[in-house]
Image (cartoon, rainbow, N blue to C red; front, side, top):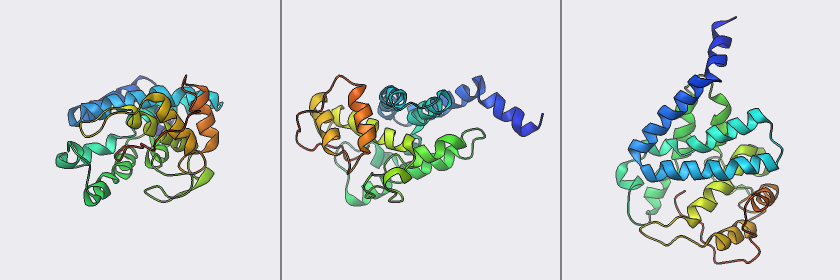
Length: 211
């Protein structure tokens, strides 16, 4: 057995979980709010993956990507990351770099290349107006399209110092309203099918500024 294959098999088991745990500890020390958000995103994303008939391996990749999708925020200056107010345009431009930062860091860890594209693409939009690359439609990795919905929904319903959280049914309605523009319509269907929020009543747009 080659050293590369041995390493891959080792990381696919307990050691992989150990690496995930260590990276999450880095995130916790940076911003515990972001850590708890990441757990909630994973709880939303995995059932969506099941509804979309992902394989067990792809579901595990999605779970890890969801847990680590905001790891790059550990490299955002604290005065921006922890700012208790809306970000300026200049600050938001810096915050937007977190998807690339997280992907770059995880890409250096053997055995985690499968999650990099998902992490880097979780702020892309189905209509191509997202970041960092402006990728559109099904050219966005499916995992990234799933995380886009889960991440945005949790950001909307979670209260911050500078705004109240949206009611879950109103946030689900906003997700439904953005199907075909911000979000993949098929993924939105999976989201609505795996939550108890119908999204039937369209509310005021409340997508969070910094997710």
